[in-house]
Image (cartoon, rainbow, N blue to C red; front, side):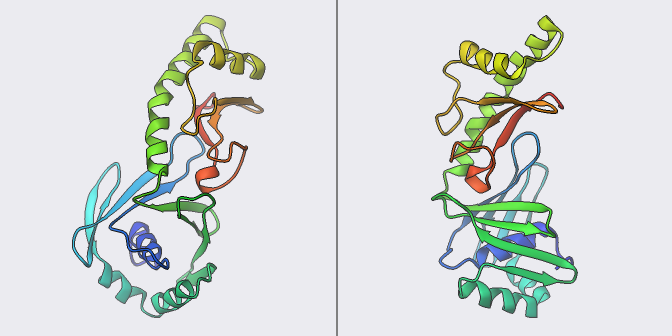
Length: 214
C-alpha cells in the first residue's frame, strides 16, 4: 500500500465502510498537544476526489488506487461488507479498523500500531466541535502566559482550576463542561471530550489545548 500517499489509502479504506455514501469526509490525526491535524476529502465527480490539508490541495482518481491495491483491495472490501472490522496487512503496512464511540458514525484506523486516524462523515458534529475549541485556545494561552510573567511560574493544579473558573467562568468546552487543569510531569489544560472522562478515543478523546511543555 505504500505505493500511494497515506491519505489516498485511508480515504479508500473509509469509502469501503458499509452504508457510507458520502461526498465529504473529515479525517483527524490526534496530536499530543493542540488540535488534531485535519484533512478534508470532497468528491468532485464520481471517481475523482479532492484532498485538502492545511498546506496543499490535490485530486486523485479512486480507481487508480483500487487497481494498485488489487488483491488487497478485494480482501478489504469483502471483510468490510461482512461487517468484520479487523486488520489488514500488505507490503509491510498494517491497518487496524474499529468503529468510534458516540453517535457520529466515525471509524478509527491505526497504522502500524502507532499513528491513528479518526474519519467522520460530513454530517458529523465533531468538525464543528474542533472549530469551537480552536477559538478558545488563544484566550487560554494568553492568560497562562500572563500568569507566568506575573508570578514566575505556572499555577498549581488547584490554583489553575480556580483561575479558569474565576477569570473565564463562561469558558466551556464544546460539550458544555469547564476545561480541566491537570498537573503531573507537566501542567495541561484539556477538554475531556464527549464522555467527560479522562482518556478515550474518537469523540471521547482528551484534547490538550495548553501545555507547559509548549
